[in-house]
Image (tube, rainbow, N blue to C red; front, side, top):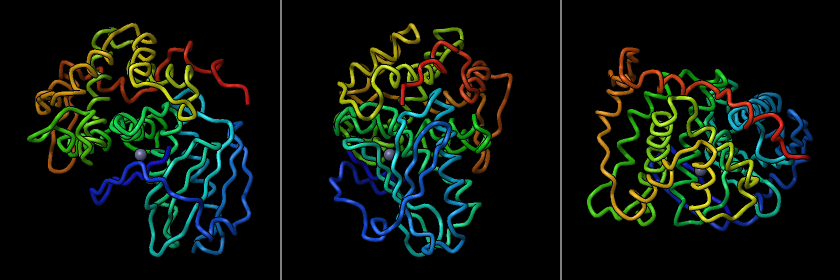
Length: 320
Ligand SMILES: [Zn+2]
């Protein structure tokens, strides 16, 4: 499985069968890192980057730690990361593979700064792809939606991004995930907006509903941890129904299965302004104000806190 993940620019390219790494990456001698027990082979040319190797190594370690904390452990015990350089700054786009060992190819500007790496979403997004089974191209909305949704929350839980920024992005971007005219449901509408933000909206609705039905004790994060534990993540091919059955069983609800049944073949109408209001999220000129007296304010805040369900963490770590 491979997928190019681009959030900015609003273009969408899915399931490209790309060939191997670039010539520059192949010439690089890998740095071998051990990050919290995960063996990482990091391949890039130091000389390509204005600020050298250290900021990139710190970026990889930080991103890996963010994803490991969200899932209770990192999805794989061995990971190769091949960094290709390009002109300019910033982190551009990435692709994640799992068929022959976990591999992330990512393109970074030669002039990338430590601040840009600190604020990067791309590598966390790509690493998150490793935690969900391959559910097939017709369900790209789930794999991309989970990656978009988890990235912000995982970074907020790790202190890498303010929670209010995550909510502001969701309030600004979730409308892109709403069904447009002629929408045929998530499984049959493969536009950029429905794939990335339609999938993320599915995750948000599921998270809120799981928390409503469990007295805010657990949420989507616990379901996703259970799916990773049972599947091993992207190395497995699973029917999407199995993902939802395992996730639902872990949290003791039928939210995922029911929400999928309601949205896979038909456009599911969602009143986003009402949802933000119930969560106490008030759009305010590009950012949001959070109100603690809203009916679902405690659910909103719990989403941004790491779960305490110890049964789903720690001891579930796979043997390297
Ligand atoms: Zn992606």
